[in-house]
Image 1 (cartoon, rainbow, N blue to C red):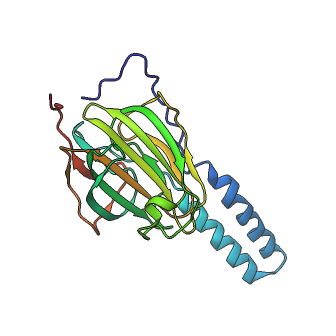
Image 2: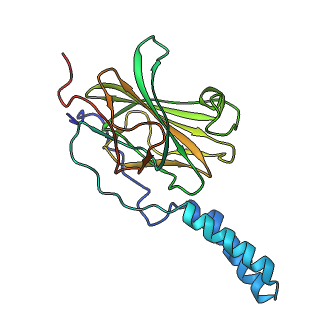
Length: 227
C-alpha cells in the first residue's frame, strides 16, 4: 500500500535527538541565567529561571516511538487530546473525515506523518492566534496544511497555532515522500494538529480521548484502495 514512486525523494528525518534542536535556543539561556542568579545569591530569580528552563527542556522532548504495524492503520500525528471527530467538506466539495488533536504545553510537540505518502502541497494561511480549542481557530489562526498523495487518496495534515504557539516548523518540501511515522516538524508552545482523511476511513478514537503521536491508531483505511 505504501509503495513509493521512483521519482519521489524520501524525506530524511532530522528530528532524531532526545530533544528538538530548539531546546538550545530557548532553554539554554534560561538555565544559564538561572545559574548566574544562584551564583549572585538571587535565590528566587534562580529558582524561577531554572524552573522555566527545565519546563522548556521538557517541552522540546523528542521520544522514540514504536509504530503499530499495518499500513492501513493511520497513526496520530501528535500527542494530545482529541478535540473532534467529524465529517467535513473539502474545498472541492468532497466529503472527508477530520480528526482534530489539541496539544497542551505539557505534550510532546513533535509532529509525525500519520500515513505514508508524497507531498503535493504545503500551504500557509491565517493571521490570528486564538486558543486552539476555539472553533474560529480552525480557519483564522496561522496554520500550515500539508497534503499527501497516498494509496487511498488525498490526506491532509494541518498544523494550527494556538494562543501561545507562534511558530510552525515543517521541514520537508513538495515532492518529498514521507514514510509513516516520520518526524517532520513541530509547533512551539501549544497548538492543534488535524488529520483529514478520504471517504472510507474509519475513526478509532472519539472526542476526549488521549492519543500518543506515532503510537496511537486514530483511524483505519482500506489496505487495498477502492477501484
